[in-house]
Image (cartoon, rainbow, N blue to C red; front, side):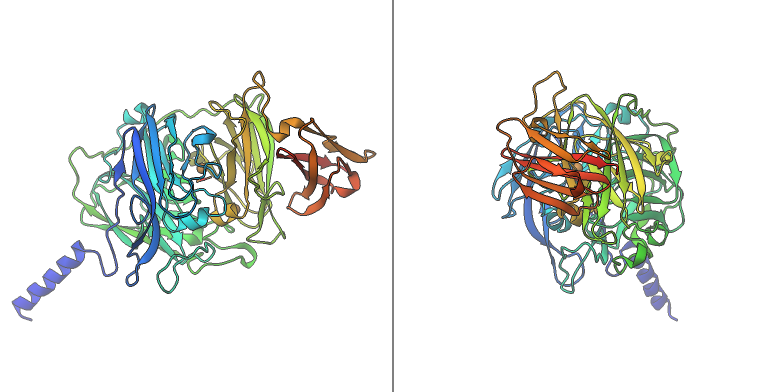
Length: 561
Ligand code: C2O
Ligand code: CU
Ligand code: CU
């Protein structure tokens, strides 16, 4: 072998270590926007994601995904969201504590060609939030094609900690998204077959990070599947924040499960690893049974990468930066959930119809209806929500408008990384249950509801969603929604009682009544009645949906015999 030949090999080896391997691209870090006025334009585009044909996409201010919006707690912000999609859309600030009119829910549509300009004060704690369209029935279509971006909120408490916070250097947002690509490299609006995972829009991408403690802001921005994250070398990492704020202290772990919509900030110590490569991996084989992306129960719908372990991205460790963070903080904040005394408990049942179905889901026996407010509460009230899952799969349950604390998972104290502020929580399958607590502190609106839903987008789009109104505290005026103008009696039907009577104030005349059982089976549908015979109801929980001339409301009736 000649010297020249050796030299060539060396050059080739060197090139391999400094450039991505074939098909590997550098992971892009989104540009940032900040200030009091933020311009966002939803638009179509195309992007080369898989070698070959370009993929038709949707993005904010670009072809795919969107800029990271940096906000300071206490600041005023006005968004001008321009809709150039040629179709109706909305933009929801997922996790932000805002009034219903600013929320970007299905009730805040932006028509094609129009601009929506909500304006509000940032009241949230430092954490990682996100934004995405939320038009009922179209959320999956628009989000899966690329419409979503990060929101990073900063506050003085977080700023006082010795944490990495140089954006794109040691503080990096990473959105992980399962997607289905067809043979022509196009994204298919079918989240049940996910065959690909993108990180910030890159397939099997490469990210350079310095040899020090780095902060990764992980978002599961998928429409359907879960991640069970870990490193190829089983590197220990520390979770410092959940959806809506810092944890009390860093939590050490080697695996982290995130469902669709969930975020976690983690610290990873890469000190001493300069020149090395570390892979961030999906450990699908370690997901609990029934979590989409892991093994499904009873042969549920399987995608080609379900229940497998594979690399998500490669970290190439580069030289340490000046002012590197090299020690972990020991404490972060103090999370205190609201007191449970005096809180009312509300029950939510997640069900499938038929019981084994993996596609047809209900909350409290009902499908979402834009015109139906499922319940009302009051500003200042604390509520405990007890959510049970009677289906074969896990569902990530999300509430708009307020962060909550998790009180229990399957009856036990939640693990420490679920003891911070959350807005999405997994309800485990097969009668799993989760209790959460929240207080409706700052906003009331008698007209416009907040949503709660499963964050699996096909489930949400097909009606696994409900809505509630936060009215003024009872000293205020009566809310003009159907619930407050109707009464249903009795709501507890014991032996010997034979009917249920519905009474309405004048102007709220009852037009139609529907009765559903817990799994969404319709038991009765009748026009112009105000009495329901007890024989029409099933033992246990029944939902009475009352349609009036001015609006629709839902009541729960329990039959004990
Ligand atoms: Cu991230 Cu109601 O949504
Ligand atoms: Cu949300
Ligand atoms: Cu679901």
